[in-house]
Length: 62
Image 1 (cartoon, rainbow, N blue to C red):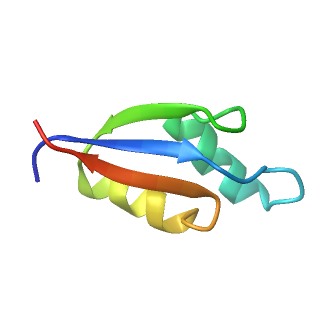
Image 2 (tube, rainbow, N blue to C red):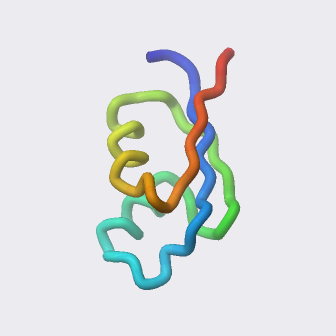
């Protein structure tokens, strides 16, 4: 697993459980439509899976 993943917050975190908010903040997503590039690691993949209904993720090929 090499490369990066581009993650975009597509749905608001208002009204979501605190656990989901913590995961989003941990990834650096604080505002709607904000995009961050993260390393493609199992930990990041797990975070994305936890909030998959709120974000869009795509792999960036080097």
